[in-house]
Length: 69
Image 1: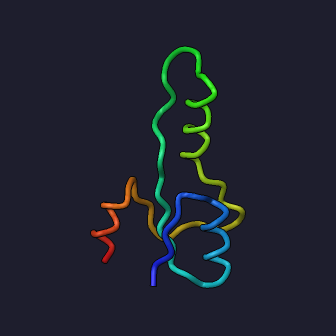
Image 2: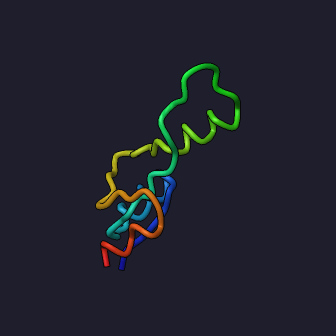
């Protein structure tokens, strides 16, 4: 079984209970110039908080999970 999420808190919870975890790292590099609220949200969303746990796999999108199967 593989637990999949793009949220760091989900990764931490699943790892705490012994699951293998794939984290979907969404987001992009910071653009040059001023950053608006929507861009800030996307950038923050792309950086998972680890809360003391680390995922087993990191993928960029759902289709990358196929390589893990």
